[in-house]
Image (cartoon, rainbow, N blue to C red; front, side, top):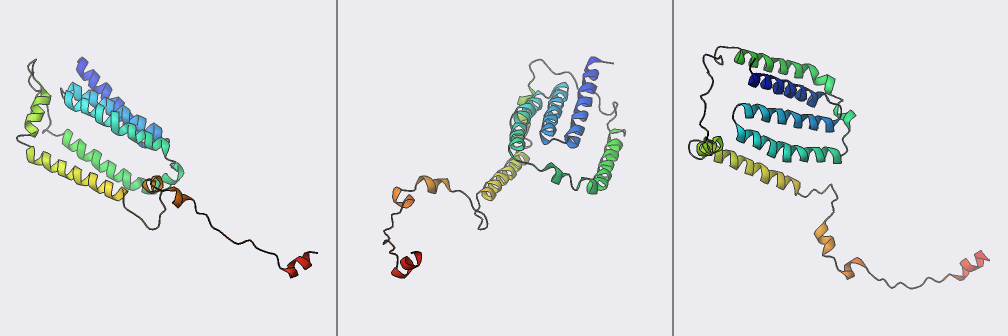
Length: 209
């Protein structure tokens, strides 16, 4: 077996194991860490396919930013694991059926003659000064510029919607308004009230005696 193929099978096996542990781990923090491991192995497979730019983006963006953010969020919030697992066995048959259909479709596609070695031979060796990052950028901003800009608009709309949902005012919820608290003056914080002293009536004093 070739050394490159052996590395591919090793990375693929570790990635499949990490992906299974993501959905079977009882601790959410462990699930996030296993997902980080799966991303690292996917980046290694992309390096074998000479897609260095995608591998670096996967490590820097997803592992370095997104998954670290998920990890901090999972660690800070109090997740009721028992409540999350209440409907696991109820939806397990439906999930297993959908997963079985997906495995069957992938087996039919990958096992057919369309992806055979004769139909799709190995790519030619690239020159030493070839930059796939430059080639990817050229394709994105020439042939695929309209789908690229459309995806950018969709992401921008999603960001604006998330911000608007976060900052909306709800009448049934009490929230802390930091700008109003900082801008408060001394007269608004403290109010002096002049009240006359209460005098005890003669009848009440007689009852006490």
